[in-house]
Amino acid sequence: MTMKFEFRQVMFAITITFLALIALAGVIAASLSRMMNTPDTININTAKDQAVSWWVNQQRLTPNKHAVEMHSADAWRATDCYNRNGTWRIYRVGNQEFHFLCRDDDGSIRDTIWNRRTNKSREFDMVNAFTPQEYGIEKDVLRWLSRKQAQQASVPHDIILFIDGVAP
Image (cartoon, rainbow, N blue to C red; front, side):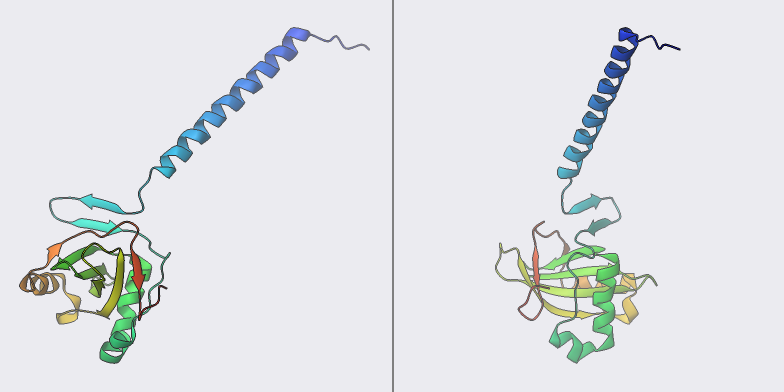
């Protein structure tokens, strides 16, 4: 038995394979360029809420010495909330005091308070971590922040957080 070699069929198969590889390379290149253009900080503004999430589980927080001394287990709950869920909202009092609020799994609002080192700095030092006001009920926490004249804010996308002078 002899096999007959068909040059056109082989060239057709090679051409189809080559075109498929080019299409696959184009799809991969397009998806990589979209991934590279994705910002580190995601701000979604709606009429009711501003959801802010970034660096979740990349920069693990622990409470600073002051928070543990003043609030003990509650300080650990606040930083654990951040580590699991990220920041729900950010509020600014003046230009240097920032409240990173986290909504915990049970609906409680937890707070980690940060001081910006200078007015334009990307470096923030932890001041405190706790559950504010009446067990973290949202309306009470927001009322407390409004009495402090806090405003919703954002932070630099390349923020560096320090706990007792050390970046985690």
